[in-house]
Image 1 (cartoon, rainbow, N blue to C red):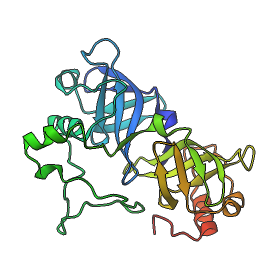
Image 2: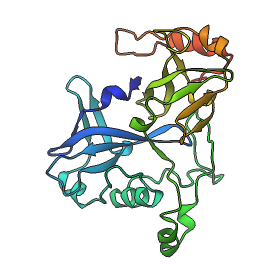
Image 3: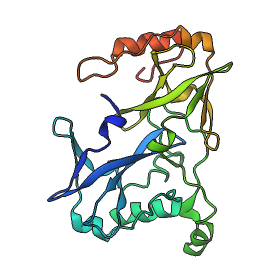
Amino acid sequence: MLRKLDSLLGFKVQGKEDELGKVSDFYFDQDKFILRYLVIDTGNWLKHELTLVSTDAFEKIDFKNENIIVNLTAEELEEGPSLDKNKPVSKIMEEKVVRHFEWPLYWASSNISGSPSMPTGTLKREKLFAYDNLTDEEKQQEEEEVESNLRSFKEIKGYHIHAVDKEFGHLEDLFVDEEDWVIRYLLIDTRNILPGKHVLIAPEWISHISWNKEDIFVNKSKKEIKEAPEYREERSDYLVDKDYEKKLHDHYGEDIYWR
């Protein structure tokens, strides 16, 4: 089932025993467009205001009561590495968090061939850095230089979207598959060319992203996008209808991810 990330902001994060805080942001892997963490605003009870929680710690999302239930205690969170407010999460900091909570090292080799496994429908855009091959001293030296592969959902919201021949709107939301946390679509407001119309773009159709200029470039033309099936939210639990997805992929001549 696909969910909008924006709709999950503000959800309470419920631990094994206590409420831990509220969701203030999400971090996704810019290489594979997979959701990796939520950011908890812990308020005043924790010595550090913000902390990361891996999607591997999720047990259930209670949409009715707006709760995300995780398999952590307040004590475990208290003992975890702190996250600096308003500062990018370095790869070194991420590794400290992951190793502390014993979450899977998603960037490590996970199959016989030695290459990272990839969920269906995703593309790897850059080679992941081999952190496990560094000594502790080398990791410390690299900490300031190595750029994280994580990107904030709040950061990317509002980025300008460009077709191959024209800017046509901005990013309004991301649709994530709660089965494996793969980001399936970008929700685009096309007010630049079609006032009031929304369309969906799959991450696989992105040619590149300029993080400095806040621009996302899509390898589709203005005409293709203008004639694409309009996205209208379903009044049901399924925010994106399967029939709509088929029409969308057929329109662009793209293979659909579940085939």
